[in-house]
Image (cartoon, rainbow, N blue to C red; front, side):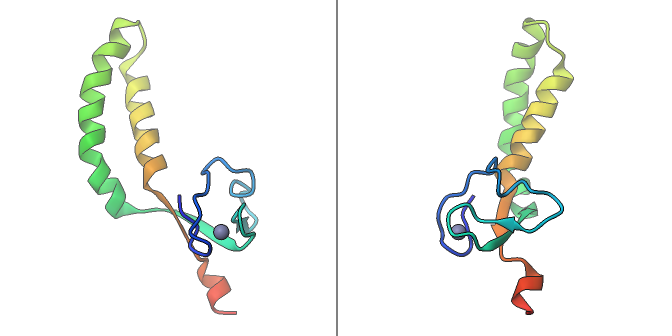
Length: 94
Ligand SMILES: [Zn+2]
């Protein structure tokens, strides 16, 4: 994800970003950011995710794993890649 302030790449798993309930801060510039699910990106990524699912499902089944696990994994990736950062609105109004 890219920070809306410094345009630097921010790791989605960054500890500063995952402080739920409190203000999320960019680990690079310490400015407040807000992560959100970009629906447009989710829609674009849905097709490759669906194709990927058709490919990995038989692989999961052949290794004795549940296909629900494959679906969960692909959905998780879809959400992960659709997450974007923006400047929190309440900060703009101050
Ligand atoms: Zn930043």
